[in-house]
Length: 336
Image (tube, one colour):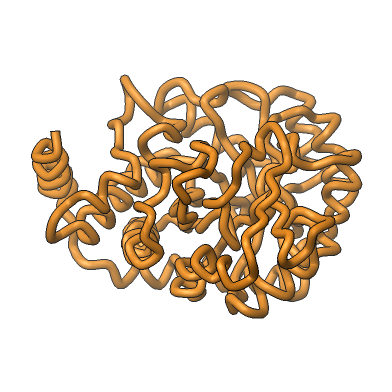
């Protein structure tokens, strides 16, 4: 099955006739869901199934189901999960509980036909940083972020869901929210090693998402998503990540230029998949025009990522969700 190397959003709770026609022609590799697309379990399952009726079983469905502030599936139909920062406050079995939480999330997602979750957040916040990351990170110590984020990623894969670590090579120092403006990080190259460390410790994970952040010590003129110096020099080179690499949302206001230009610059920098989230078909059409057919190294990375998840799922230990949920609830109650 042939796909184009981009991920699209959709506008509502079901696919419109225009969206069906667009997906049939443009053939995005993935669909990403937001709260505007989610009502109840039967509706979400029908939406994901309708997308795959058009694109085939090889198409992916993504979501941001982190827990805490970023949770697209929530009450009354789905449990509320803790933010990542709480796991660094749990004594003893914090890695196990981070893995349990992610495995429970994976079970929720797979039941709906969602097979990719944009988790874990491996950013390391600094005290003066914008709060857009905040408690979405597994603490402010790179070692804690690396090990707890890894536990969450492995929990997702044990449940058959692909994790996407973000925002590589690091969003933790950003003084602005890239949804609304372009952050510039003025830290030295040596200081940035702290930001890179959790990603370097997890280079074997299957997928990652870039940051719309300018790192002045690396490339003062382009945000990471558009910078070959960041993508090829740092992410692929110094950090050593050779997995599936997608952009952060191209509709965020941190980026300038037309949507064709935003997409083309990201591919020129070396990303594998362009991500466009807001469901605007006119914008998505421009992203599609700039997106190549998914082939070559990018396709190999997709296939490798899928194989890695399938292997972890097949080899996963027996899991009792009732016991895991009770253990997680007990640990979190002790923090209250």
